[in-house]
Image (cartoon, rainbow, N blue to C red; front, side, top):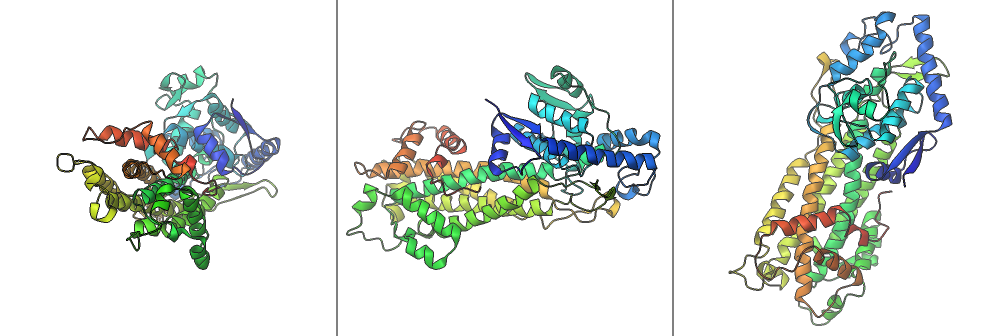
Length: 512
């Protein structure tokens, strides 16, 4: 059953955004938001009637802002803007991210500061509710003046441009066909509406939110696989003692230490080596999990805070203030906050994967782990996890390269008028590749940890870790001898991606 979200009554929460991206959701405009939209549109109509010169309403754009446009050409001006800005290239945004983008644009327009008419926002809501999903190429935005090219592709569907594509029910169709099949009609844009639709950070924010949702799941999964690996190593849980972390006081560190304690509680493997264990200290990738994962958790929460504000923001230009009748030009379209948040999430993802890969490297090394070499019972004849660890290392290295900050780059555009841009859009888009890489790394760790834990049978691990092992084993059999390994990694990574292991992490490890 579809959940109905009222837009314009309260800020969208992270739970709302998860549902929009992943679940059947129906959007409805709150009456108070509808009144705000009408007031904003009336303000624009009065400006046209009074023949006032206002940027974006009856002028050109960017460097052409001083060019006055006649009243008879205002509709054509907005259509030209959409068509000329539909310059996106590359792979299309996935459906979940596109739904998020549409919902964020609706939320922004619902504030009434964009000057669009009620029928324009109604069309966008009906497209969302009926499943008309525009084809939006992911490349072509520099994150200021907003995500112009991606949002132009959204707008091109709304005006029924035949060369624009949209998905509806049975596949991709030209925009007029998709709208007609859904019982909708294209709209002719009024003054300022094209600019209001194109300006804004909704593409970069939707991409970053998709990555944020994935990052939360991967962070929770990494605590589970980290606990699994700790037991596979016969490692100590002493470094997770609450007293150690209270003395430092970092909130993420204390929370992740508590999660690791809960995951390892009542492990017979742990109890078996409390007496007479010759190992003094475990490697950092095991011992310092709270310090690394806790810091990552704190940074991810900071990014989530920024992105939730942005999800509910008005980020087009110029902005309409119906109470005074003013239309003010500013720079809310500059996606610098999103760019910084995306770079923060890139660091988090890189570190989650790096720590996990190091644990795999320890488990396959008999000198470090006390387990069979490469986790195979007949090393030499069998290579076991030798190249699985190499794959994890390759993905870890790739993520290191991808984690270079995007926000520090800028290329002036629009003949120098837009001389500093955020690069938020590709800064957010690269997070999706990084999250795929981390899912594979964690899948490899889960497989390696299962082999290590099973080596200590009949000793059992803790209930949560045994549950995690059972979920992996429902997809991948133990590695008794070498076999085609790619399928095992793919199956384990899929278990990571759907949250099978994340579900076992304590509920306190949440971003919101």
